[in-house]
Length: 121
Image (cartoon, rainbow, N blue to C red):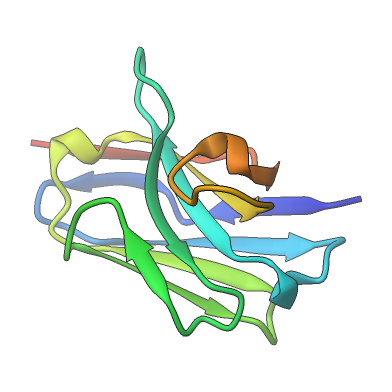
């Protein structure tokens, strides 16, 4: 049974930082590109970042404020978020990529339950 468990969310002031973690089990982690998505209330789930199987390649929706990384020895993917803004408030999900466009949530096989990030102004 595949499990992806996110942690590290919380309430932070604008300009602050958070580091999200996603621990994977039940799959051969090193064989999957891993992505982060987020979903704000009333909005569609949107792509944030993805990292290749080896960690050698990364791709971001937007900014220089976020950094995705992974530790295949720990079966964990991370999202470091700096200079947070109120518009970053959302539930953040990690997901294991299957095939297709990295930006499309339909391309991902497995999902975590999400972790809430709230940024106050």
